[in-house]
Amino acid sequence: MELRQLKYFVRSAELQNFSQAAKDLFITQSTLSQQIKQLEDELDIRLFDRKGKRVFLTEAGQTFLPYAKQTLSDSAYGIQRLKDLQNIKTGSLKIGVTYSLSHMLTNTVTEFSRQYPDIKLEIVYRSAIHLKEMLKEKQVDFVLTYKPLAEDSQIEATTLFDSELCVVIAPHHPLASQKRISLSTLKNYPLILPSAGLTARETLNYILKMNYLQLIPRVELNDVNTLLQFAETGYWATVLSKASIYGMETLKAIPIADQNINMHASLLLLKDSYQKYSAQAFIKLLLAARTFQANQVISKR
Image 1 (cartoon, rainbow, N blue to C red):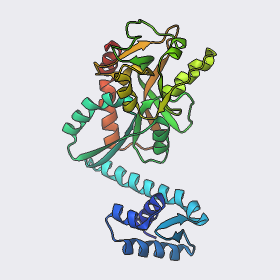
Image 2 (tube, rainbow, N blue to C red):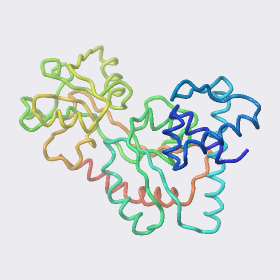
Image 3 (spheres, helix red, strand yellow):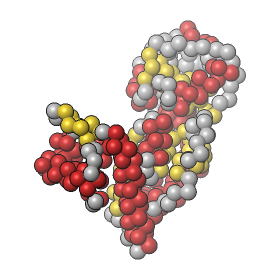
Image 4 (cartoon, rainbow, N blue to C red):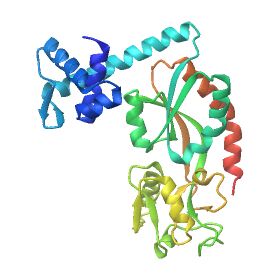
């Protein structure tokens, strides 16, 4: 059994298509099919059912998949540890981040790239829930997101700064002159909210439940960038962290009346997991810059 066979198996399982998997892996489909067949022969069990152009994992394949992923992950981390021991500053670093915290990365990415030009950075934008799962599966090295309301025994969270949950509207919105806005007031205006699963929505739902209130949005979206575009029209109001509009002059973040709910921008790491040199270096730069970032977010109107 070879690592490349496990790699081919995992990618084929993810895409459920040998042709697409081969294209992604820069090999021919016949090579991929041959390697999968050799793996099945060695294990003496079928891993895939073939149905036309699609392939599906058998029960054996489903059982084997997490072990194959873990083996590939352990191998990659082992190689990285050897490189770190040799002080080889190459390779790649994969960072998961939610859109509303993207402003935190600009200066750090630039400085990191100057100091480590041979390390490739890959930045992935997803929801907090998705990023947590990617972190657990070691598909990203660490995550920048808002701390989830529920604790997770596998994840360690370091708070970078707090950002107040606010009503986000355009300067020409009818409520734009208010110093604070009550949640009950929002019932009278077109409301567009982040979808369930996004941290801002989970935090809002918690506030509503604690105050025996209910808000029924006309639209729900799972993309913060698109939410902000809607809010910029002046027709819609939404509820997001103040940090979400950092650097945007076309929007205002107005605190919620009688509430002071902070969302905790956090760095998420796997507990008891090895952090490669490049991740340690990036995190060090990020933590060094967090005081400046926090002050900018807090002072920005």
